[in-house]
Image (cartoon, rainbow, N blue to C red):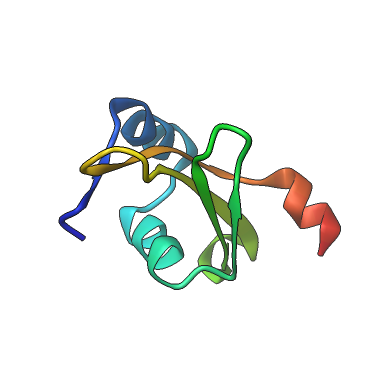
Length: 82
């Protein structure tokens, strides 16, 4: 996706948390759920079967061009709600 770029923080978070770039794109392209945060960023959520069915949260700032992936993490709170 050419209109979305990674921030330095997002890249570092992916490396630190063993999150594959493919999972990030999959989550953005076909999320199980989306939310708009208090900061107006869009949160994309999707279960990642390859990572013990944990829920990946990808936070994207859609208010700037190009859109920016702000951070990515496995959301422990969402796992409890399943």
